[in-house]
Length: 127
Image 1: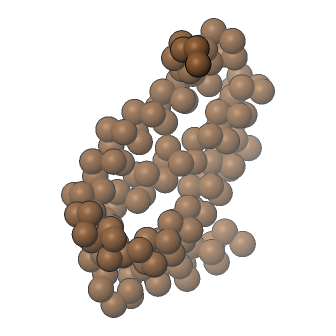
Image 2 (image 1 turned 90 degrees about the horizontal axis):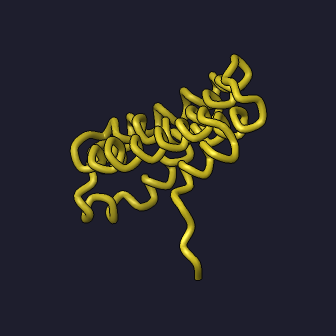
């Protein structure tokens, strides 16, 4: 297997600097914000939804070399979709997350009231 240069540099060289910047922002926010926050606050899921929603922006930037309102709409749809999606998975595996020391909403919301509230709130606002 041959080694390749950094993907962020390849994006800058062969696609455009905006796409490269978005890839770097995704990497940095996921590794240095979202990942450590999982052990500190249940709001980490909101932070993690940002790098999770950036890939459509990268595709848009790669094709058009700009970010406009349509691209931000795609970002927003994916950002808000992630909340009920992730929280449903986190609810199923809440014991595992608790044992791992993560302070996710599903771990601290023992009755599921807040978690369920997010399930019912977000889908109605996306339709």
